[in-house]
Length: 118
Image 1 (cartoon, rainbow, N blue to C red):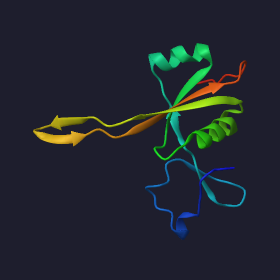
Image 2 (tube, rainbow, N blue to C red):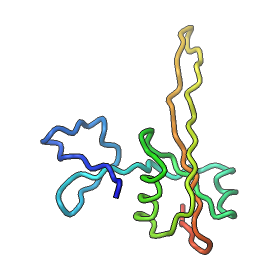
Image 3 (cartoon, helix red, strand yellow):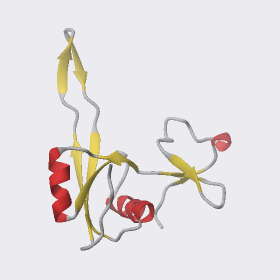
Image 4 (cartoon, one colour):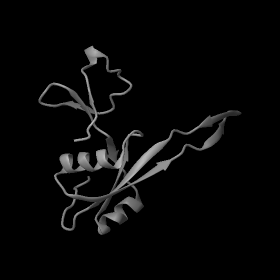
């Protein structure tokens, strides 16, 4: 498996890198690459085509997302597409600012599988 495994916090993992984590059987901290499902009109329209959209960590790749979705939701993933939204530069009170960069994963499931998203 190509999952990122970090040592316990006492051994040097910083709190900035631990987004959502859990502990596996060996006691190592496993970091989740999926932050949350994306809720929009387009995302709900894709459910009819058996596609789901997730906001993922910026360091995530297709393999990690596929393994995480299959493990978390117990479904078979057919394809994963990634989209990076680069932050726009905007002015705020006369100063230049930049919106944060985000990454989305479009996950296509096997025919007949579905994910219940509230």
